[in-house]
Image 1 (cartoon, rainbow, N blue to C red):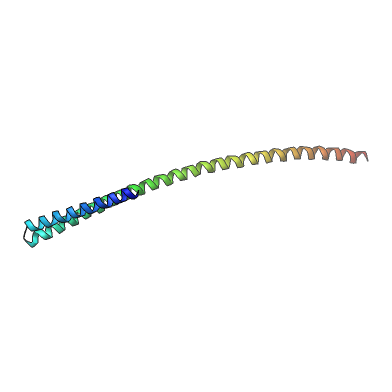
Image 2 (image 1 turned 135 degrees about the vertical axis):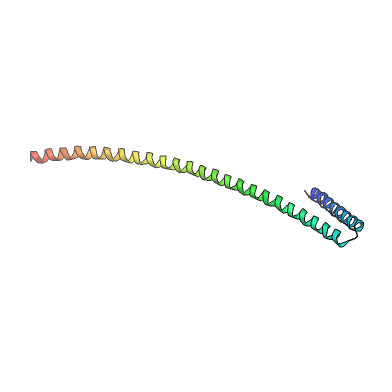
Length: 119
């Protein structure tokens, strides 16, 4: 990584020097102030295009983030469904237990009623 970083830094310096040399040559060829303004305008246009590209890329990333959030929400939606199904199963088990308790209490009540009638 350090080697790649050094290599990229050297390339960046070289490209920057070449850019400055090319601008100097372009300025030397055209002697008027209009050409200097023109080269500055070209630089501004270049910067604006870079900015537009960066903004476009940023919008692309924002769309990707939104899509990933939707997928995450959908995944959590599945988890909610699973949780609700688990709660439903627990409620059904509790309902069965309560029904069996009701049956056993009904039987006990009948037996107690018979015992009271005997007495």
